[in-house]
Image 1 (cartoon, helix red, strand yellow):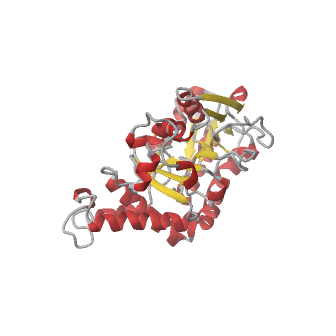
Image 2 (tube, rainbow, N blue to C red; image 1 turned 90 degrees about the vertical axis):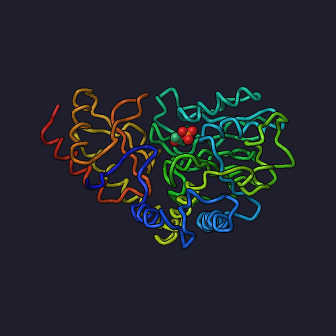
Image 3 (cartoon, rainbow, N blue to C red; image 1 turned 90 degrees about the horizontal axis):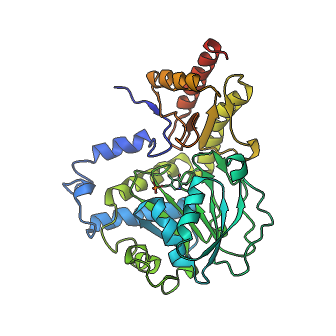
Length: 362
Ligand SMILES: *Cc1c(COP(=O)(O)O)cnc(C)c1O
């Protein structure tokens, strides 16, 4: 069977080149006589894989020396707890609620301290990013939390909030490595890799050293979520998700070969423009979020007629345009145009939408 164009929000499309390389190395990685999957995480060969992955990630994001990189497990969802457990030294944090993932993080953090909702876009079904230039940041807040790209609703922070000197913690799961970022503006940047970077099972955290301290804020923090122990052990306290990290490493190399994150951003802008321009001109389909806040990665759109939307998704699937159904909480459609989605996929989607529009007017 031909490969499809996979618009899934995650786990999602990976670069074909990376998958082919991994396939070629499946039975015998680099003369070791075994698959990376079969290899001890304490072996020299594996140490070289994880070291190189970290080095390439540092190159791509220009990560300063005073930031630690951690490959962790448990899903981005586990970090919803590990963030407050490690950081709530004053027991206070401020959250900006721009979607379901931010809301879940906010709800989880409430178990561990006094957590304030300082801004929200829930009043308009999370279809915009609130003005965060002058928020009522709590005086003794340990951090300010955002979900930088809202996977379900398709909005993105184009400017980071003014945290008034407090460390910014950002969940970047669905925009990780989609464009350059200034790491010095973050206290913690983290995300699950299954959206834009690799297979599920790996989380990457980039943490400013001084926030790690000698021990986590909460003494009861499980060892597996203790950033001091995990970073001291360089992500090898216990068995890490070895194969997933290896694939991430390959994706980092793919990004470097492409020209790095500035080049990736240009490609992503081009791809997203193809779909947004069509949505803005279509009489059948329309985008659902405020233009200024549109994500380059996740693009939700609707017809506003459920049977016709179902028909669209069904016919698209037959054409090899897969996973266009919107998140179960919002309905409609969503096209995720992550790094590895080729522009040919977006062109094919828009051509199909035009054809569908010509045959199905409301
Ligand atoms: C998918 C997603 C999550 C949840 O990731 P899991 O790895 O399933 O826990 C959290 N935040 C954002 C922004 C996401 O897109």
